[in-house]
Image 1 (tube, rainbow, N blue to C red):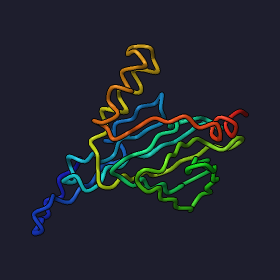
Image 2 (cartoon, rainbow, N blue to C red):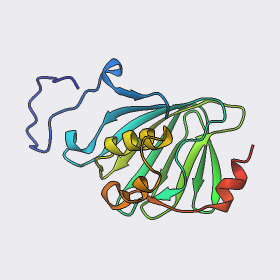
Image 3 (cartoon, rainbow, N blue to C red):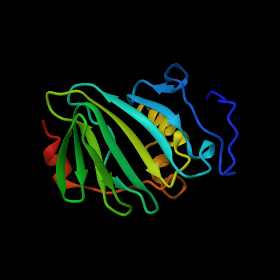
Image 4 (cartoon, rainbow, N blue to C red):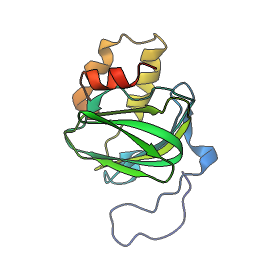
Length: 167
């Protein structure tokens, strides 16, 4: 994170600039960790995903207290929204309100890149690191379920999502 040397009269938090080459990259997930809630006074957290052709990303889940914004930068992104799957194209914006289940992955035959913003922010960077360790077999799968409250990420089953992703 780069200090811009700009005063912040609001007192909330200083301006935040994350240089692309400074963002933590979790390659196995395709995630670039940009701004966690601790640097924005809890107002938002943000990361970027770059998914390979047809790659799955987040499993079905919901957030009790935060909205999640998806801005598709490139490719096509399938997003579970409640009981439907929407395909968002480059330039599209989708906002999922608190309490609504969602999941996402690159559309079949396409890559996807998206900026994701959660507001209000939740300190979730450690969650992504935990997902990486779990997928690598370094943590037992139940570890993620034990952190649902901490990371405001509650897992759900979705037959709709399973059918949509069976490509």
